[in-house]
Amino acid sequence: MAETGEEEARTGSEAESPADFLANLGKALRAKENSDVGLADILAKHLLSAAPAADAVAKARDAILKLAAERANRPKAGASDG
Amino acid sequence: MADRYFLQSLGLTGFRAYLQPKTFDFSKKRCLAIFAPNGGDKSSVIDALEFVFSKEGTLERLGQRAINNQAGPVALAHNLAEEAKLAPAVTIGVVSNKAVTTASRSATGAKRPITAVALAVSASFVVSPIIRGHALRAFVEVHTPEQRYTDVGNWLQLGPLVEVQKSIRALRMQVKAAAEDETVQMHWYHRP
Image: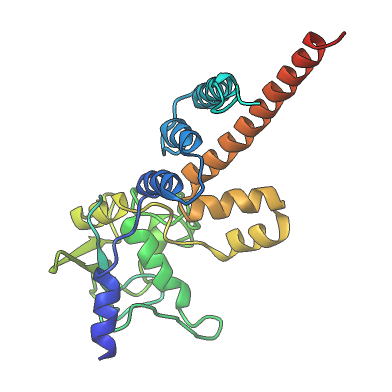
């Protein structure tokens, strides 16, 4: 019995590569309850990669600042009330 | 993904401390610990593993230069192998996709080419499969916590994740700086 278990342990589990792990992390982050989907998309696009671009941090920062500016300038619902 | 291999057996003949053929069978148990007193030939088993997967057919601790049969490739063979008419060699049995491949590597002669199966297995190594005692001692006694962090990251193939962590830290600092910059600008803009 033990030998069967050993065999299963040897062949049954597939190791997850760092690239796969990061891709799944991006998806999980996006799907998480109360997560900021826009921010999660930026992280997944630019940083959660096994081989990110040399200027990945700068691109992610620009994308976040753009997102923040859009949200700051978004007309608020009910802003004219009162 | 790289092919998955399982080292099923390791055989030593006239190699290091093992004169008579000796085969270690790893097929029954996945983990194996070797206990023996000093001089009990434990290192020869690890030497066999290092030798069979080495590019040049040598051992790091023996080096390339022969000194009175105590170093260099000539020291791979047991002293009495020639007299006993045994051809010094290390044999491995490897399982891949349920097929078993056995290959022997000669431990004498000028050319000791690596076997095809050993080359295929070594190509799938993410990190060195052998960590020597001196490396562990340096890890514990000499290395700084930062070096240890890097070592563990490398051993566990966490390099890309460590890079992601660094990038996110850098991003956080840059976004924070940009936000503070914006706050200062707004402060000046709204100044009476």
